[in-house]
Length: 230
Image (tube, rainbow, N blue to C red):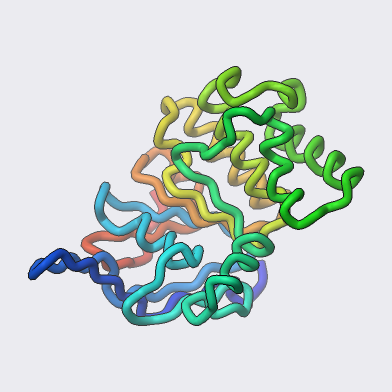
């Protein structure tokens, strides 16, 4: 594991306002993530997990503080630069899978590669490799409605790795899955961190999945602290 952090979060603060009411979603949050580690963010629903992940992924901007990913100061980038960062450096996995219903598993995985105009032969080879990596080589031509929830999330994970991201951000990736399938998905993420050399930040409230992480960040009322592994 490298001594240089891939992600640096410093003094992150985010406040949501509705009329006279304020909700502090993040309170001066600071931490680092290093290459090749799987870090879980644990906290109750509404504790600020999604807000934190959105700041790191450049999907939202903080009121104070900064985020640096792979040498890029995310919090100071233009929208155009953020698009490039999300395309080339980041991979996202969501609870809702986010697959395109009319496309097959292979076509869904190929979408990010088409956006960067990857040559057809290289794209087809990588699609096959990624679907094999997540155990779906027998399901390349099936559409999302023909797949189980666990299989759909595997397709989503394969798609998130399409353009060789350095940081994988997963927001409750097992939230719609039963406990056994959820653990299989978390084990897959851990294996991919090892085999692909990617760093993964995974938000979850499932205690059984926390044991698979290298480190755990506990978030409560917007404040983050390092938690002991179970």
